[in-house]
Length: 186
Image 1 (tube, rainbow, N blue to C red):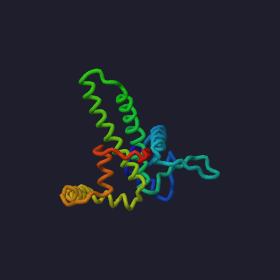
Image 2: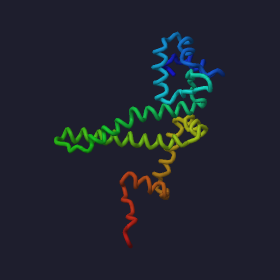
Image 3: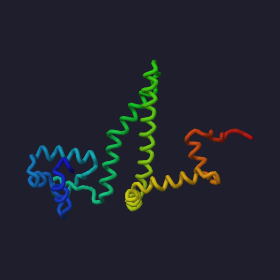
Image 4: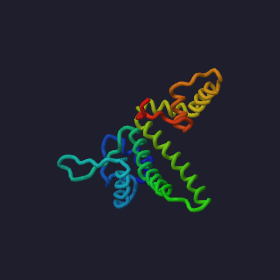
């Protein structure tokens, strides 16, 4: 929406009447071509939807009604346009054989970056499946999540603490223990 005037556009679009491009241009004092380019970009980001009305040749534009849909669309598009190409480039670079010590160090750093981005992408996938209410609660928790994890770690470090299934899975993911071979016969 920023491409078409930010707050003015948002206020205008949430009125009862869904505007046409000419109304948007008049309201914002933008040329028709600038409005058209901005609307095409907003459509590519899935931030506006093109509507047609029976018996009317004009094109109407409507944003998603739920603010969470806008939030998720923005995150998904950023991922598709920025994160996925970066992961692809890093995968290609990691397939190359390093020829020097500096190349090995660079590849080590790229591996760390790749792993971090993959972890964030996996977390994003999990967050996408949350309801808006749960997501809002998670966001409100903020740094309290870190404090909760600190408490959990204190209990893990306790010599009397028993290992749970989650602890074993976490150790397995970190490579501390090898996964059981499900195909092996005992």
